[in-house]
Length: 214
Image (cartoon, rainbow, N blue to C red; front, side, top):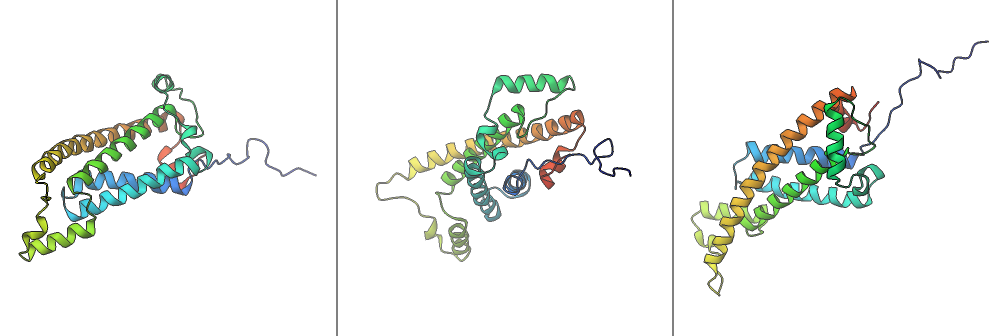
């Protein structure tokens, strides 16, 4: 009587699930926000600001998840290590990258760099808008359209309006530089994923979509 158990060459490949739903949701949400606000929306527009606030909430969720989420999602699993990142890139160039249960060392540094850029972009955006919510800004624009310009008066009793303008100008410059840097890093990230997918012989993007890899 033959044994029909698949334990040899015909056994199904093992499927791991390294990326939980929260990691996947925050990853693609941040990617969509960066593309939308960097390339599609009008700077300072209502939609642009709404997306910025949504990105702030998503980033906060990802940072919290990095402390309490599953092992692969926690910061302890992919601490930034420049030496390890250089070693990984050297192996990748030779076509022999190593597998990692979480982000590889180069990917880890890229993740932290993108989060840092996003945090600065969000922070400077809040400075530029005076920390006002998208709802408040929309209401002010509606009032201005109706002819009520008083809502735009921001000068305080101490007369520091000029200082606020100077801070706003600096924030605007930093905002633009960091937003452009974030787009550049995103392009490098996409290129790195493509190269590593080819070297490993599997689609890394699919893994971030489905949460599963063979």
